[in-house]
Length: 272
Ligand SMILES: [Zn+2]
Image (cartoon, rainbow, N blue to C red; front, side, top):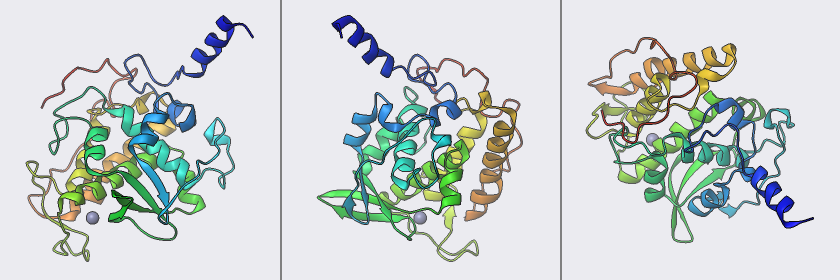
């Protein structure tokens, strides 16, 4: 093979049609149909977040595209965590001021707080454990039906806000039972000092309104309405009821849920 052809093939390997110029995700459905290990940011993500299962380093799971055609047994917990980290890497790149608890992106904040994610077989999520001098959040393994759901944007988004919740516990924020859920409540929704459930509400609100735009509005209509309903329900039902004081306002359907399709070029700074 001549050098020119070889270089062309290498370049073709690293073109991701679902990632627009500037690293913005243009269509999350197309993005999630691709394998994490084909992503140009894969080495960086593997370096920044170590993955373990039950405390032991994972071997990277084989992945074939489109991921939606993989047998569910092959779409493993490891692949799902990698997909989530991939979305985190791209979803708000270049934005600042959109997350009240940090000045930059979710990826950079998580990287500053944890060194990895530990998948617990048959367990649940929690913060935190130490392996090799690094802080890990724990996340539970998932059954076939939940892993199948994680081929979709709502499934991956639900994982991402859970990772953010557990990462927020690195800074403390023990739960209370004041909202009627045993150890499942936070005292107040304070945007100046968002608690773990507050962080989850905030991310879902940004995804719903397009404050973080991953192009879900460019998917087929059934996927768009499924995602919009998921995010609306997350902010109004699932997370709003986790507080005992100063509950966030009930949200109505935005005019353009998820943002405009195609996603508008990202502003350098999105302070609000
Ligand atoms: Zn918690």
